[in-house]
Length: 362
Ligand code: ASP
Image (cartoon, rainbow, N blue to C red):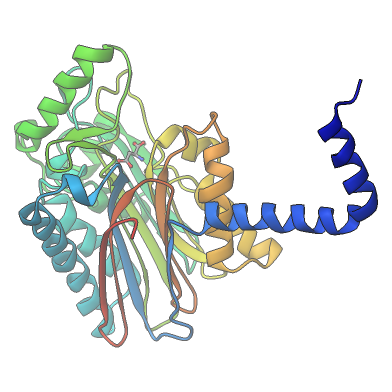
């Protein structure tokens, strides 16, 4: 039997059905807008002569958990890194050089999960992944699971330029690195107290699981990978990503960072891209290539494509576990920083030298 209120509702819908439907669609549109527009940052630079964008990892990064000193430390390092790349571009250098040298600064800092600050594997080692891509010719290079190469992004570039391959891994990649004169360090160089604490913490609670990087800096977990994308004065796009991966990873686990199309992509017809987040989901979603393809084949703008993938498609993979963020730049210099976490270390600079540095969602 229908109760009184159901009856009234049915009569209402029958009488004002069309208006009701329109109202319902309006409500749903508002909800969707609120869900997709509350995190990303878009900087319009249409026809900018050159621009550069970087990230130092996404995660549960909240203002209330961060001390002003740490905040300044992160902001300064981001600025130092992006200014290196910006100078290269301003002086007529290539986007590839800008990407590589900018990432070197972040790799040499213990603040980020890449190079010096890399997280630990289950066995207490550091295994680095990196990749780089040239948007002008779709050349790409990557390395995974290296333990002694000081700057993995340099190795990725050497693979691209000095080998007939796209990806080298483990000890073979290390032999290739030393044969090509790259700096080799003792694995102890990569030790940091905070990365070790993060490993111990994960093992104590969930021995066999991988986890993002817990650090006292933010009193929570972050991913911490670093990445850069740039557009140079010749109209060429390039991107690169470097990481230590996930805390407590084992069995030679490889994330999205060295996988072209997942963690890194560059194509002069669409965009240059670098990601940070739970790598398995970025691989399953082929996130970098998906954004590029939405632009190239469907005509979406970078902003539309990035929002669609990072706020909708990625979280939908693995029942909401697909968390992280991306930075990307298109051929007109438009820059997008889209993330579905509470924060992402990030910075941009345009041809005029305007600097933007951000950490939190707002
Ligand atoms: N994406 C990286 C990985 O899964 C982690 C990170 O962003 O820090 O290996």
